[in-house]
Length: 513
Image (tube, rainbow, N blue to C red):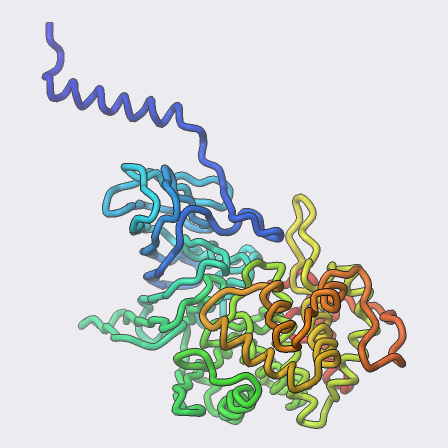
């Protein structure tokens, strides 16, 4: 007796076949691009061209509904596509317009397309998911008194949205943020159309970057905020985001940004992006953070807690300098972080020196005295210590701040101020909107110096001990009082009050910035 029709029997056979295939496939596993410090970040086989991120915000206790659309191109044949993603629930996934199977493996989301992907072909991914703002202390969304902000550096963007979470894969971004009436949403880039439904229960805000951006530099701010508009050098649009209640008292600080940009442009050339501003949030982060076109600051920095004006301005310049060093020119690997933080610290120190408040030479001498102990604690500047098994990496340590700025000081001492200035301008000019690493910097510096600087820079970059400082035999060996990472910004507060060298961006050894 025939129990099923031929059509139903065929469907059942097909379903059984799919079940069998799923059963024999190996379980998904997290991948990475082999970064020495974050080996499972990033994913091989494709290059992301753009992200289109949609978030619907309700409150800080409720996961945001989100849609991530990724446009990419494969670089090799792929049977599966790995994305970095955690702290959210996936509802559905599509690859090139067809439903795709999705599974989690570690902090990877593994997609199996309906059909294998060929190399060199377009890749279009749509993922409907949630994004959880409830903090776990490992970065991503940062709760503020009235909403949210983002702090994705170094390895936390994938705790907000599915992505290829490594700075080597930069892409363009579009943000669409829906928030209840009375709140303002701001993101990296230029504002687009704002949609206000008739019921006025919520507003959707749109922003687009005009330059490619690393995932760790993404920023979304939602809160009871005011956006203050201004104009910088060459007509550059400025927009600052502050709590509405703080608007008047913060105005003197906001007015300093145009002068800071002009100061930086005199040293390294034109500002590299479409706009700039500061986001001053009511949040306890323990750090300030460069996010592309919109730098994040704790409101406490500006609230008269004993920080002298010169120190606050130098911190503002530090984050601004990152727009060139770290944002426009992005590190090829996380071991190249010294190029970000060393340069930002260098211009921070140079600015304070220009104000006559804290001399560059004094700061570098004191850094030199602590350099060997910084290297012992955190590794050399261009090869920071990797995390021990089962531990989080303490990447943001003094050795990549003042310890790395010390390399730049040594380079200037070795090749002269004019050649050094040419190196700086050429570095941000030739690598604008791109990625570059330590070898690229050594090569460029050698070209400007007219001789191979590899032997000179090698011990500065990778040595366990600090070389002798050119032009300063009186400095002696690099030994002195311990400069632990815990003295970073927390110590800088007291240091600034006493006139000692500030050290920005980290409140402690394990703070992510």
